[in-house]
Image (cartoon, rainbow, N blue to C red):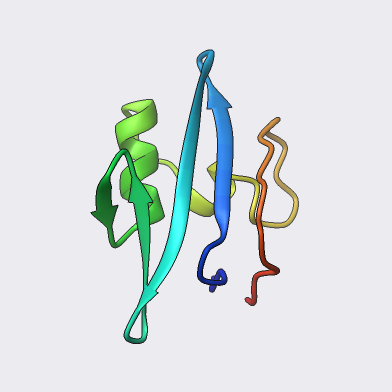
Length: 79
């Protein structure tokens, strides 16, 4: 899943809002969360939830998700 540079994701989980910013460094997509850069969206979701979950699914970026997440993107994403 490729998201555009500058895309922002937002999800409220357990009453707290979590925001992720997407950046591209070279050919690599990275994620900024709480002033720390991560290579995996799923690693961030593990920090948020305490369990292993699909990062894209958690943020509502996959088809047929049944969670109540709201993802806000500034750019369209490419699959």
